[in-house]
Image (cartoon, rainbow, N blue to C red; front, side):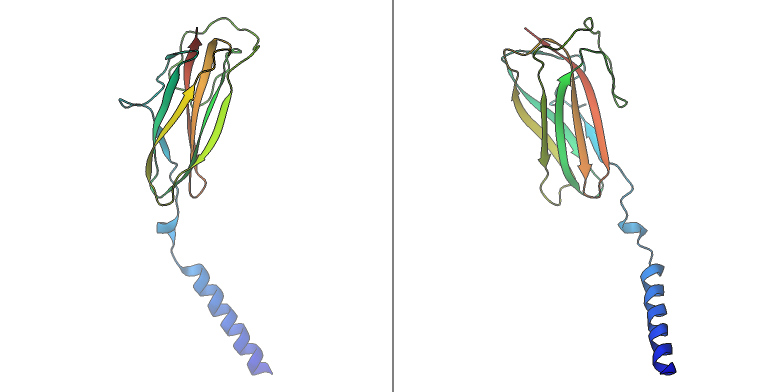
Length: 159
């Protein structure tokens, strides 16, 4: 009985040691994915004006060192002049106002498995009846391990 117990304890100790001693740091993802609109087709750029009733292709490049998982696009009003911590250039803002019929666009999308780079290209028509004024366009990207990055751009919707 003692010998069986000792054998079981030794096997368990060996198993625990082998499962904890490996260096799997090469498999750890410690890098956030990246988003850029700073290329010729990137859209929108800071302070771009979008006309109601017009159709636009919202484009950004996303990359990751290991594997992308998903991205999202969020367009919302900035009538209260709020900011985002990741926001780049800020544009001249209209006076603060109450939203009556603001444009709101929030969609999530998946990226095909195995990709480390992808160009977002979403076609959106700005509705004719939405409030004109200041808006934010926010791109977010998540990699396969859960790291997330985002970038926000000031834009205006005009007549």
